[in-house]
Image 1: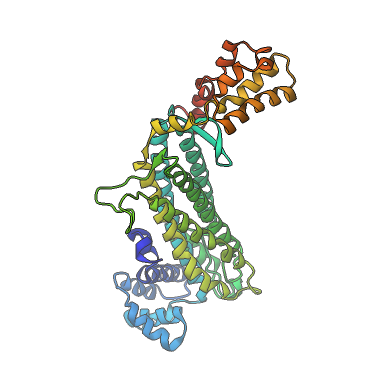
Image 2: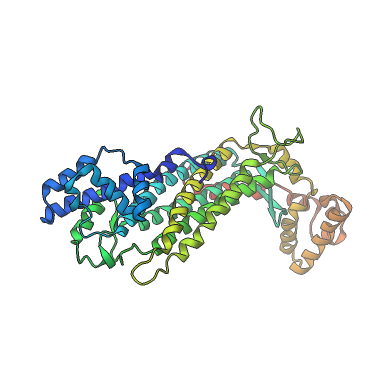
Amino acid sequence: MIPRYSRPEMAAIWAPETRFRIWFEIEAHACDAQAALGVIPKEAAEKVWTAKDVEFDVARIDEIEAVTKHDVIAFLTHLAEHVGPEARFVHQGMTSSDILDTCLSVQLARASDILLTDLDNLLKALKKRALEHKETVCIGRSHGIHAEPVTFGLKLAQAYAEFDRAKTRLLAARAEIATCAISGAVGTFANIDPSVEAHVAEKMGLAVEPVSTQVIPRDRHAMFFAALAVIASSVERLATEVRHLQRTEVLEAEEYFSPGQKGSSAMPHKRNPVLTENLTGLARLVRSMALPAMENVALWHERDISHSSVERNIGPDATVTLDFALARLTSVVDRLVVYPENMERNMNRMRGLIHSQRVLLALTQKGVSREDAYRLVQRNAMKVWEEGADFLAELASDADVTAALSPAEIEENFDLGYHTKHVDTIFDRVFGEH
C-alpha cells in the first residue's frame, strides 16, 4: 500500500527485512528440532543461531534471486554466507512452502493483533460518544426519509455492537490462520519428522496444521480476508452515516474541521466530509481483496503457486489499508462535531408527521379498524406533505378522528419521550451495566 495510507507498525510486518527475519527463525528452530532427533549435528544448529543478530542484506538476496529465480534459495544462499559450511544442514527435508506458508501465518497473526487493538480503540471511542449522546434525540430515517425519533447515542450503540461482532470474527479468523506447516514435499513428512513441525509451531506461536498438502489449505486464508472485508463494510456503513449527516441540508453532525484546513481549492466556504469519503474508498479496496483470496482455495493437486502472486499483494495491502481505515475512523468518531439543535430542527421540519404511527395505533385501540385508521391518518398526513399543514391541527379538525379520540388524547401521541423510553434497555444489551 502507498505510504499515504500506511501506518509504520503494520507496514513493518510486511517489510523484506521482517520477512527474512521470520524465515531465519523458522529455519533455525527447525535445525534445533533436527539436532534433537540426531538428524543434524548439535553444533551445526548452534552455528546457525550465530546469524541471529545479522541484518540480512535485502539487496544481496535480490541479487542472488536475479540468478536463481527462486526467493527461498536466494535467502538460503545468503544465510550460508554468514553461517559457513554448517549451512548445508539448514532446510533438511523441508520445502519452500514450509517457509513461505509458515511465515505468512506469522505475519497475518501479527497483523491481526494490530487490527484487534485498532478495534478496541474504535470500540472505546464509540462507547464514549454513545453514552454522551444517549438522550440526544434525532430523527430516524428509512429510505432516507424521516421515520420516527431515535437518539444519536443509539446510532453509535448500533455501530459499537457491529464492531464488537467484528472483533469476535477477527479473533476467530486469527486463530484459523495461525497454523504452521513443516511437512516437506507434498506434505507427507517423508523427509522430516512431524516433531520438527510441532517444535517450530510452538516457537513461532502457531498451531500445527493437521493436513498440509505441502501448502496450508487456502480456505483458511479465504476466511481471514473475508473477515477483513466484512470489517471494511462496517467501516463504510458508519462512514456513510456521517457523510449523510454532514450534508448541508441535514448538518446534524460533521467531521472536525481543523484551523487552517481548506475544503476546496475553488470555494472557500466548503467543509467537506473528506475523511469519511476516504474511508468509503478504502473499504472498497479491502473488500476487493476477499474475492481473489477465495479463488486461491482451488489449487492444483497438492500445490501450485497461482496463489502466491495474489497473497504477496493482498496480505500487505488488505491489512495495511484496514489498519489505516480503523485508526482514521476512530479519530472521526472521537472528534465528531454533533449538533443537537439541528437534530431537533430537522425533526420538526415535517410538522408532527413522525408521530403518525402512534395516532394510528391509538385509533385501533379505540375500536377503529386498522384499514380505516390508516386511511384517516394518511389523508391528514398527505396535507402536511402537499400543503405544509400542521399534522396535529389537521387531526384535531378531522371529525372522523375526533369521533374516536379527544383533542387531549390526540396530543398525547406527540410525546417524544415515548420513543426513547427503552433506550436504557438497549444500552444495557450493548454495553452491559454502563
